[in-house]
Image (cartoon, rainbow, N blue to C red):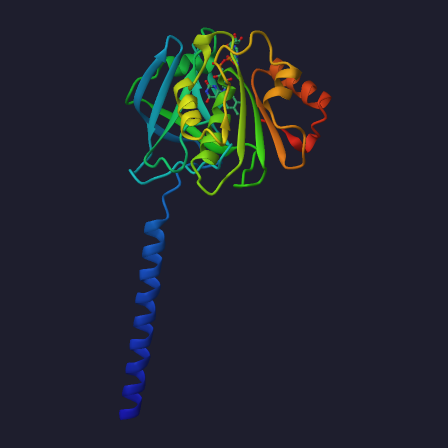
Length: 270
Ligand SMILES: Cc1cc2nc3c(=O)[nH]c(=O)nc-3n(C[C@H](O)[C@H](O)[C@H](O)COP(=O)(O)OP(=O)(O)OC[C@H]3O[C@@H](n4cnc5c(N)ncnc54)[C@H](O)[C@@H]3O)c2cc1C
């Protein structure tokens, strides 16, 4: 009898200690893992907490995440779908790349260029602080692992800078990632340049790794084959050239890259 009591007692204590240990480990792990907010299947609503006009047609939109430690949960180089209403009240869904990373907790930001006739542009123009935006994601085929290539060339046009900025930021802010980044950024006018201060900041902080446009008025006209040759790393298996711009620019850049003998694996279009 004595033996049984002792044995059961030991058993109970053993299980209790085990459960406490499992519970503590679960608590520690779950409290350390930030809450991911995006859902690839369903739109979720995020509150606009700050709208900052940057120029006559560009604004920065800051959306709150559910808690101050939540992260959006967007892999590097992927984008989200935003749903809104155009000027006729019709539903419209368009892709956008946040300029923030998952290291920015509690919120995410979009830098949006609003076109006079643009359908989703209308929705963003009308949005006021306190309004909610429906967002779904992540979306996109781009996958990035630190050190996956030796160097990226980036060919961006207009708002096509946002995915490039996101990838560049992730690389440059990671001290163990030594990937080089070469950027060519085309705009119709000086005023159209998005994220200029932010790009200048990366150039200042990471001069050995980041080659931005040398001067902001460095060339007039379209991005040429010669510009790509002069500013991007030459074709190699550990090099990738990314492009994101209006469709005619993407088409022209693809033709230039083919002519310069960058293989299909060395090119990616967002
Ligand atoms: C992966 C990805 C990420 C993107 N990220 C961003 C982002 O972070 N910020 C951002 O502002 N945009 C971004 N865009 C562009 C965005 O998805 C929309 O195309 C843009 O906001 C215009 O949509 P709209 O409905 O207002 O215009 P639409 O109704 O599609 O276009 C109406 C008119 O607007 C003008 N217009 C529209 N797009 C362009 C253009 N690119 N160049 C010149 N004129 C144009 C034209 O006059 C056009 O006739 C991204 C696109 C992609 C593919």
